[in-house]
Length: 181
Image 1 (spheres, rainbow, N blue to C red):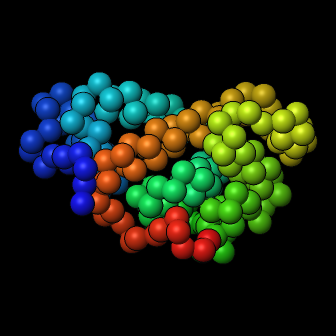
Image 2 (cartoon, rainbow, N blue to C red; image 1 turned 45 degrees about the horizontal axis):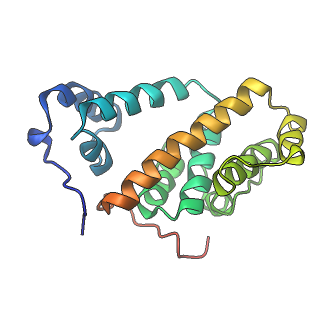
């Protein structure tokens, strides 16, 4: 049961409605998480602006892989469910790869470095070692791309924390962190 109110579409503040319209146009639906964030127009504007900027960072498969790894680290069933669905249907990531991503790995060597690094950043709250940074650099990521990986981790930590605190009802096929990846 949700612990924070997820407003009906018509009950969100007026300043949030145009953003939800854009979300619906892009996704075809307005997921519960967006309606939850929409209860604060400032939070919704900040989240969607950040999300739009980071959509230009790295490729969609890498972003979804990172989201899966971070959601698993943080035990967020809502985000695991959403990103498993989006990973399969939008980024065209297979189920075996999604299972690896949840473990903080990837079958693709370059993506593996990014996902391992991202999972480490989330797990260690940024206190990664020199070897972690060297590994992601050695895989071909620039310092700017390392900053983008960290930004994607931070964005996903926000949604993980929000959905865990709120107890957001999952409106995607359910995946649970407690299930073996």
